[in-house]
Length: 286
Image 1 (cartoon, rainbow, N blue to C red):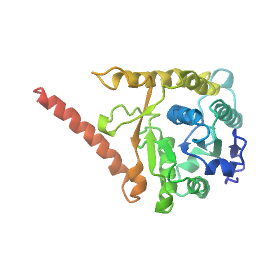
Image 2 (cartoon, rainbow, N blue to C red; image 1 turned 135 degrees about the horizontal axis):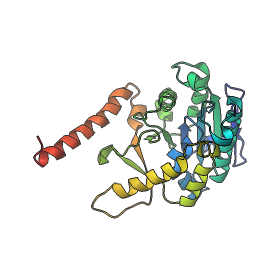
Image 3 (tube, helix red, strand yellow; image 1 turned 90 degrees about the vertical axis):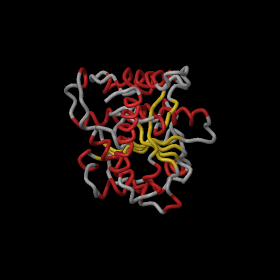
Image 4 (spheres, helix red, strand yellow; image 1 turned 60 degrees about the vertical axis):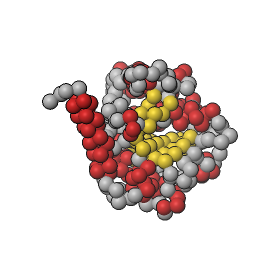
């Protein structure tokens, strides 16, 4: 399997040829950075591990990780060294999680932020063309506050929208990373069960030592956020899940390629505004 950049890394823990592994994918996560997959898609990883003969998880990391913050023993590492470390960490996570396939496309963030970069378009188009309609696709959400996450989301939507209608995935989810989605009204929330295998969840996050030792405790923050979501979801019910990752359903953006991503996102914010106003009004606020 060939991608546009010579640094791209194709890793098949399953042992299958990459083309065959990609073709059988049932759960696909396209993320901006190494470790985003493990923050976004724990529920999908667990689901595929529980049904190893039927469900297959593929991860895609679009950027090369060169701009990562670094401290401690990584403080003096140059960009080339950091790219290599992050590539190996992502491979390690793929082994721990028994991923079907792990692709790292190694694009600079600046390239992904261009609306018509030929290499980014070609690579994501190749991956999208192998998606079956039954594949669930996990993307960054359109209310995320990280610029590169939004750029990867938009390039991914473009690739999926370019497919013939009958080949487009039926379910596409936008998942929280750099902005929680607990602000969504309950009607708009998609609860992803991230608590079925807490030991694995912790190990996957710890695989990214360059981030954790480098000063970003994504392991503690991610596990804590998931537990908080589970507890604070419903005020009058006991916790239904041990850990929740929130997502929003982006499927309408694939079904209707002319639907504005901005308008789609702002509708969710407007529904929150209306929910807050209605509750305040109900109890006499003016």
